[in-house]
Image 1 (cartoon, rainbow, N blue to C red):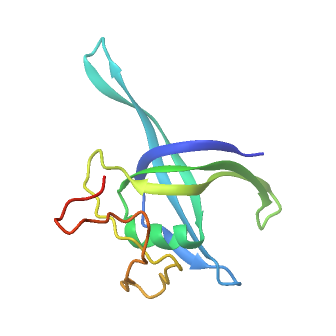
Image 2: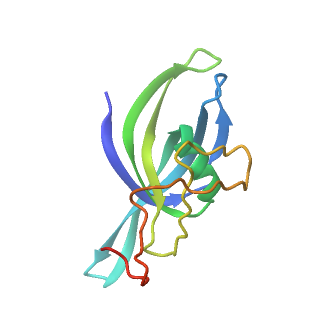
Length: 151
């Protein structure tokens, strides 16, 4: 069973990017999430407990996040919480709780972000630093001859 969640917190390291045997990208990392509340009695903000959420990202999302979200970045991530049971090498049963991220982005609350589009036919993130030309897109801002935009 999975439940949908939204995480807002800071990445604790760069995402670890690797590829499965069939060539599908997967990235793992941790997002530190803590509540912050205002204590009226003390007239100050107080940090709550921190949860270090293990996250997994797949395919192009994994490649894009690994290339553009460094350690310490405040992010907003949405995904599905899941539980995975496994046995360690000693035969002890273990349980992991992790979030499979469906979407992630840097928060602009404390930072500015530069967005670079990737081509529609995908991005080959294995060629670090290689940026393709954006594909023609009906959502791109079009301008009239006088420089004004249609909306």
